Length: 640
Image (cartoon, rainbow, N blue to C red; front, side):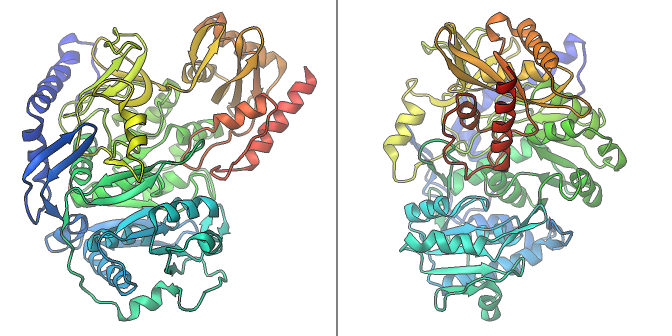
């Protein structure tokens, strides 16, 4: 890995090496991806690498494989049999170390339990589980028998769960009696019971005993997992499935509108997941990889379960909140397991920044070799805090950009194939095989330093196959904006070196007095103020300007909100972005309303700022934050 250097020769050498790899992958993409696909074990090789009927892709068409075999069997039968596949840490402090040999045994038994309940190839299984080992085991068990799973985040409501089960017509639901979150038990089985009242397709419920809280079990329908496993078979033959057979359907969190069921294939997705994992994270036989996401999101699907296990690496799963029972919990886990690669979100990083203290310095983090960022653009202040306090100024940071729809990372630094040249807050460069660009409104490549929208010109193996039961929505949403291009819906600029700098969603734009302002630009300017740890910018209707800017800000430890500080932050934003970006109000709050995947629910803040109804908040991490924001707003408004 190369360090950043002011020498032009050193500075551009990694870029030249990168261009050579990228050009080779784009000049003959089918040959390139065929070589990558051969990292997997296939029952039957493909007839054609890609059948492309824009916008529908069939990768490795005609090929047969099994995702579970590739993630479990081939390691359990070889020298990695005794290697730890999963370290699991429960919120109360209980833990498990599961080797590939043990994982193989358990997944086979789980597959047997599913088969005895009538689940077979092509059937849907709903997974509504906390962050416990049974979740990835059931994902793999489904893949083993050719069933398609849809994992529903355990924080979702009964109606959200029911909607997903109904649309997929799930035959079996797997849940738990409960899960632990911040010292409390959330009653999953109780929520599941409400959800399936209107789900006629669900014939059976498998219940994992996790918390021991009392639950209602309906005879003939509900089954304790431990009872099903008593006479389970120890071996279930992996079902060879077509490369284009759906591995899973994952619904977007859908903070507004109807959630989209993103369909990912088996062969293309697994190929791309493994390749990007190797390129970006550069792990080896001694690596311990920790992605802090929830498995209920695509980040967890790809970089907790399928990619690390396909490689034969050790992956960590943590059940609880990042700051419970104390703000040092994550650093304790890194020290305990000797984590070498840590992959987390800017939201979490900013939370630790806001809490202050010297927590990371109390722990031995010397095992870390690489840090990663995912979920949203990382602002420079958070990047530097991460680099200094967690990486101790010796660990490169890969700032990754991708989406649920893309399956895995598209743009990132890639120390596994070329030296890292870090530019704080830049997602770096497109990975091999990814023909990405930034276009203006007319569809012309934007000049360096000019904002535009991100598109991908060529198909890639990890891409979604379609939106479940709605191919027209798939075409309209992703392929109708620019001819022949996948429309990502994100704003970005490219610099003169070709590095991508993401500016947030294209629909998260304010129009103030005829000027278009990205919310991320305003938020980044706000957190540059030394008193501010995190911020969210929204628009409020204004009769004169069209929209007025309103900022909600969380202060760093040791700072207190005041009218004087509000004016100071307003002036700072004006000096940074210009007079048009100066917010009408800056409201200081203790928390921001976020989904459980870490995304700020700006529609909630817009409703608060505009004195409108908030609407559904079932996806929130902490519903109390909505009331806290409203209270702060009312107090400040009354003081004006």
